[in-house]
Length: 330
Image (cartoon, rainbow, N blue to C red; front, side):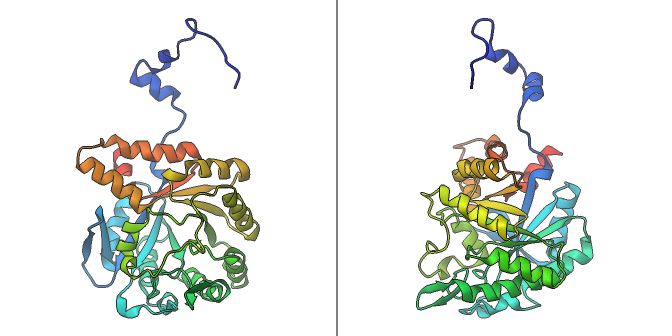
């Protein structure tokens, strides 16, 4: 960048001298339109259950979703992301519950679409980890996750969610080739307007612990996910993953986690000019929330963290702070 102007004729602090001018020249701002609200759902009725590792985040029974979704609608949050806490008795080694028309996600979709129509969008993950007894995102044979066997189930899972009127199918499994297979299957069945948001860049991160607690897979995971999720030392690989998923039919791509990968978000945005979402994951949330609770950092850290994701190039952010922040911004 060419230097323009010199001190003392140029004083950068002049545009920082008061709140009104700082607001006028701010380059990046946050609104409710930038936020996606993740929700955990569980069996039962009239239930709102705390998650120990995620302060102020809850698991809701399907009937209790209406209250929180109504708040989201009033705050103009445009999209929900649903995640199931599946009963242990319904889990098996191939994730059969993912294809049950009466599983938690399907029941939630039917209920929310009846109650809210198109007032708010709904995004659902396509992956098997909430439903498998071993906690992995795919079919396991001899301690190996079988890519092509998994694809067959993921296609059926995506079609089932589309049938239940899910707005955005979100493959988060990181199997090779799944975007193209799912797009072809959706189009063949007439779901040409059902969007695909691909978790194209999903790292094998240490920040996922509280989420796995929230969906009940934390203590069930056998081994790790490093054979299919990305190595956190790699960046060029992210561009290859995104390029493949766009070619196969992804409408939007996701980078997950968020704050540790701001460089990746910016690189993806600059190279592809496609809508890019980021996921401020459970570990990020809990670290910030607990830091505030202990007085180590201040409340404004929340907004700073979200603005950093916007500044890096995120069009929208999945965040457990969504309701809290949208309420502050209204």
